[in-house]
Length: 133
Image (cartoon, rainbow, N blue to C red):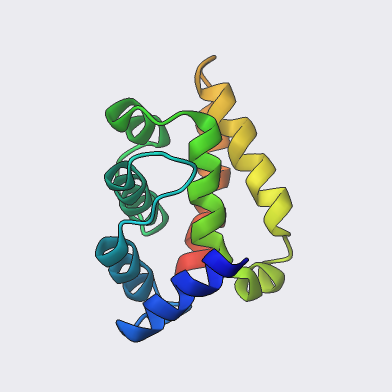
């Protein structure tokens, strides 16, 4: 908890604007947040790609994980970090953070077995709603 407060304070010092995509990207870029011992530049790269997908980037979810070799357990940490600043928006959509994390985690695990385009569409739509409103 202390560490999280420290990170938030650092973010405010550099002009982090909670609840905005730009604010989050600035924050990730400037601090290269390090979660669970994963290399910070990998976390940053994943975060950028997820944001891109949420905003309609043509890449697929599989591209992210193939390209930067992220294990599902680390990927879910990235999602949690990105969603922290959007929990109010989640309430408006009517889905809890836990539900979304579980959807994403199961999607990532199913990717190995070749999940359907519908799975991808569903998750992309949820993220689009969260980040674009």
